[in-house]
Image (cartoon, rainbow, N blue to C red; front, side, top):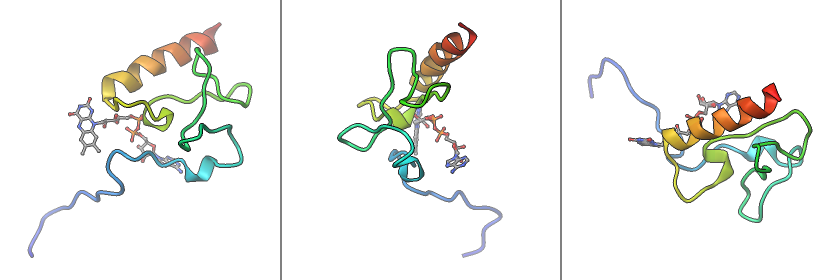
Length: 75
Ligand SMILES: Cc1cc2nc3c(=O)[nH]c(=O)nc-3n(C[C@H](O)[C@H](O)[C@H](O)COP(=O)(O)OP(=O)(O)OC[C@H]3O[C@@H](n4cnc5c(N)ncnc54)[C@H](O)[C@@H]3O)c2cc1C
């Protein structure tokens, strides 16, 4: 099929977190565990967006988490 470009669809809404296993604490559903300021089990490492495994995965949620993480970093 002739095409001028393609979008590679990796795994949809499933976050890519396999490479984090054993490095960050994860939840029973294999998502990254964070505290209320988006801090992970490793001090200074923050996680936001789809890897948190919330039932709503939307860009606005990821941005919201990003603000919380940035505020925590700033603090
Ligand atoms: C088909 C589809 C349609 C969607 N439509 C909407 C919509 O209309 N509105 C909406 O609000 N949300 C929509 N979403 C959801 C939205 O895209 C996500 O919730 C949002 O992008 C999550 O942001 P994120 O930063 O967590 O992850 P992402 O935006 O996926 O960013 C993760 C980034 O990390 C990079 N990455 C991955 N692994 C590595 C690695 N090992 N090293 C370095 N970089 C890496 C990836 O390339 C990517 O750039 C849609 C999702 C899909 C799949």
